[in-house]
Image 1 (tube, helix red, strand yellow):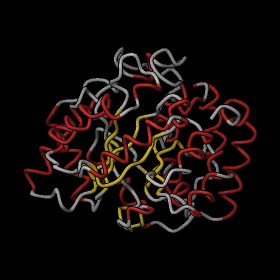
Image 2 (cartoon, one colour):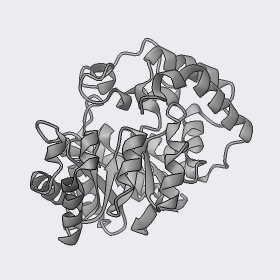
Image 3 (cartoon, helix red, strand yellow):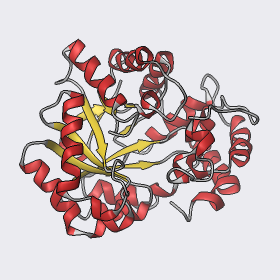
Image 4 (spheres, one colour):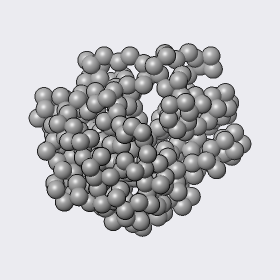
Length: 329
C-alpha cells in the first residue's frame, strides 16, 4: 500500500481507502457479520482511511467501524472520516448550523468510539449552505471545542468544491471522480493542490458500471439505490451510476474494454486511472466482499497506466459520456 498526504490535515493516509455506504444500507441486504468482515479486511490490507456517514444505515456503518476498531485496539492507527447533515428534516441550507448539527456530531462520536472525530464532512449540503456564515462558524466551533480534529465537505458539484475551499477551516473535499466524471480535474484539482486541500474520491466505479461486472439486464433489489434512485427520486441522481444513463454506461464500458492493459481488469484500470492523478489523496471504493477489498488495495502498487490508455479513456468520455454529465456536476 502506498500512502499520500491528506492536505492540510498533515496526515498520511492509504491511497486506496474504504467507503462504507455499501455495508450500511441502500445496496441491498448486508449482514452485520459481513459488514465487520469488510472493515477488518481493509485493515489487514493496509488500508487506514475509512469513510462513512451518519445516514449509512442510520448509523449502522459507523457502529461496524467502531466495533472493529475497538476489537482490534486500532483507533489510533486508522483515520475515520464521517459526514453529517443528511439527517436534517427538511434538508435545507439553514440546518447547516451549530445547534442543528451538534447532536449529529455527538452521536457519531459515540458510535465510532471517538472522543474527537478525525474528520467531519458536511454531507452534500444545498449549494446555499456554502454561502452562509453559520455553516463555517459551526465547523470552526466543533474544532475549537475538540469535538473534531479536521473539517471537510462532500460535494455534488465542482462549483461547490471551489467555493468550499475558500474557507480556511476546510481541510478536505470529497467529490465524485472517475472515467465517467472527469470535470473535477479541469480546474478544481489544481486549486485544491494550491490551497493544500485533501481530495477524497468517491463513487469510483460509477455504482458498479466501471467494474465491468454488471449486465445490461441486471436487476437490483428494491432497497438498492441503483433501483430506487435511477432518476434521482431519493437524492442527487449523480450518486447513482455517476449520473450516466444505464444503457449509455454499458456502451462506454464496451468501448473501453479493448483498451484495458493485459493482466488488468476494468475495475483495476478504473482505480489506477484515478490514482494516476496526483491531486487525489485517496479513493474510497465500497464493497460487501472482503476479497474485493484486497483486490482494490493492491491497485495502489500497480504501475501508472500508459499514455495511450489515458487517451482512450478521454476519447470514450467525450464520445459517450460528456454530454450527459459534464455540464451538470
